[in-house]
Structures are given as structure tokens and as C-alpha cells.
Length: 73
Length: 258
Image (cartoon, helix red, strand yellow):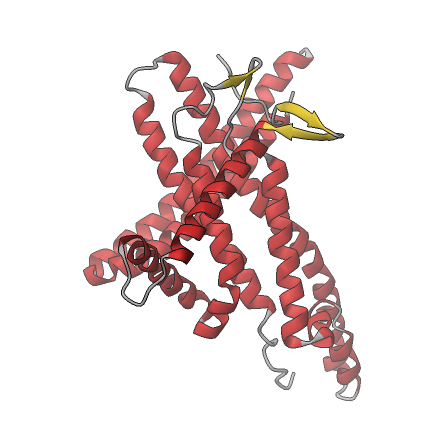
């Protein structure tokens, strides 16, 4: 295996694995938010900002994986 | 197809300092804020006009959100200059990156304008300022020894010697944990800067790739996503800065008996 193909493989795997878990995390966060909005529809306004904040934190991990992909060459 | 490079392109060199295209965008944002600030300051009146009303409306909303984090209006007003300006600056420079002209106006074969937060230098600088100022606010608010005691828990160690072996054991563990907290301060700087840089840079790459494939209407949903991402990243950066400031300026939870 030469350098080029290993780098390409590493980039692909990094993004695949590094994108899967944050996607799962964001899905869980938002599903819990949806559940509690379903139980108490008035709380939608109060829940919106904390949910976005939590989703941004989870997304940051995927961004770290993306930055690693950019630095690989 | 011109995918933006990780490092911003240098446009000119003035006396050893390199002027990059992201720097041009930062100055543009600064000029816009200066002009806006001067206009509002000159027109401040007890019966507000349209512009002042508009700005006061946003200020009320933002103060409401910040109050939820700090829990205290006085603290919010104290941190508002730092956190509010970080929020508005990041928001404006993210949105300026969507205007036509970014990427197409060239200065000698290089892009003249590039979204300011695609420069890791800028985001790292803002993250450093946020974390270091949280430490300075902490030193000033709770006092030098209390603040240092959060990291080097020597004071608790000495107090616990009088209380017996279990307390000494806990105090040694707290000593090590305090030193690990220092590492987490470095992680705060890294995560703040990389989160903002990664989001905005990835959006820029995405839009350039899509625009080079199909230029006509297809980039529009991606640009709308970029609008939303710009707001969310500005909000997250400023909320995190506010959280760090608040945590550093509160006294540590009282020493209950161990």
C-alpha cells in the first residue's frame, strides 16, 4: 500500500467514524427535546436554546474529525 | 475550482507584517461597527427612533439569555462588553462571508475578501482572549488565593491535615484533580477555536464546491444553512465565554465536612 492510498483511506475512515457518533448524539439530544415538547408544548420556547447549545457541542466533535481530515496529507 | 486553502492568502506585506484577505474582512466588520456605533450614539434620545428601538430590542433579548446563564443582572452587565462584542463580531463576520463579492473580487489573482473566521489565527486569538480574561476576572473578583486554590488545592490540603487520614486522602486526590483542571483550560482554548474555525471553514468549502458544480440556484439552500450556522456558532462561542467567566467568578462550593 503506497502513501497516497493510505492517506485517502485514513481520511475516509476518520470522517466516517468521526461523523457517525456525533450524528447519533445529536439525534438523541433532539429526540429527548421533542419528547418533552410533546409532553409540555408550552416549553418549546424555553427548550430551544439549550437544545441548540447541546447540539452545537456534539457537532464540535464532528468538526474536530473534519479538521484532522484537512491536516492529513 | 478554487477550494479555499487552510491558511489565508497573503495580499501585501507592510513593513514585515503580512496583510491577509481575512484581515481585510476583519477591518470591514470593524468599520461597519464603528459607523453603526457612532450613528446610534449621536441619535440616542429618551424617545427612541427606529434604529435605536431596533438595537434595544436585540439587546433586551440577548440580556435575557445571558441572565439565564449568570443568574444576576449585575454580572451580566459587567460581562456584556466582552461577551456581547464577541457575539456581534462573530455574527457579522460570518454573515459578511455570504455577501456577493466574497471570493469573486480578486486582487492580483487572489481573493480579496474571505470570511474572517476561516482564519485559525483569528479564532485562536479570540479563544485565548476569552479564556485569559476569564482568569483575570476570576483573580479580580474572588481574590488571588481563592482563584489559585481552585487549581493548586494546597490550602485545602493544609486545612485537612488537622482532620484526619480520610480527609488527607481526599485532599491529595483534589490536589491532582486541580492540576488536571489546568489541562482542561488548554482544552477550552483548543475547542473554542477549532469549533468556530471548523464550522465556518467547512461551510466555505462546501459553498465553493457546490457553486463550482452548479452555479445557478443550487447553492441557495447551502447558503441559508450557512446563515443559520453563523448565528448558532456565534451564540455558542459567546455562551461558552459567558459560562467560563461565570464559573471563574463564583466562589468555590463551600467546604462541607468531608
